Amino acid sequence: MTQTIKIKYFTDEIERLCYIGGKSDWIDLRAAKEVVIKAGEFQLIPLGIALELPSGYEAHVVPRSSTFKNYGIIQTNSMGIIDETYCGDNDQWFFPAYALRDTVIRVNDRICQFRIMEHQPVLAFEEVTELVHEDRGGHGSTGKQ
Image (tube, rainbow, N blue to C red; front, side):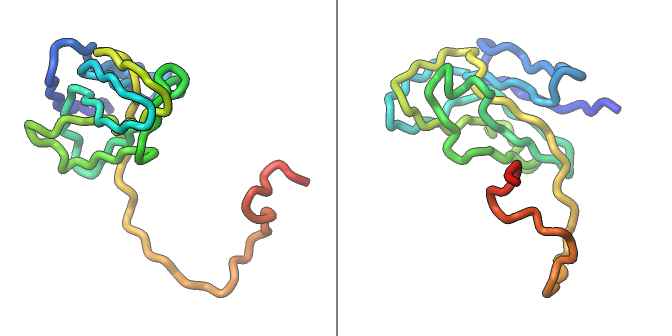
């Protein structure tokens, strides 16, 4: 079933969002203005869009796999979460970037990506004194004999 999501563009300079079903569940986001950022600086890079997400859903925003290699920036909060209440006429999405080298991000550069996820279900926690499954070996043990 296809979901329709309302989108507002803040500029005509970026390519329109495109969902490539079957190839990736992630949708690329683009810089909406040119940003010059020096090593050690932080900037919010505008992404030129606002979305009206369906009730009960949120967007997860992360860098593309090539973002650091191409631009030398990292996302300051590791992953951005945008919930369905951030949907006003001026609620533009941004990429919070910290530069590890001097760089220029140009309009329309693909710097991050997002996917839409259903909210976590309501959970209850039950305290126990023992978990009855086999131990995996503790933190950092994957792949070690």
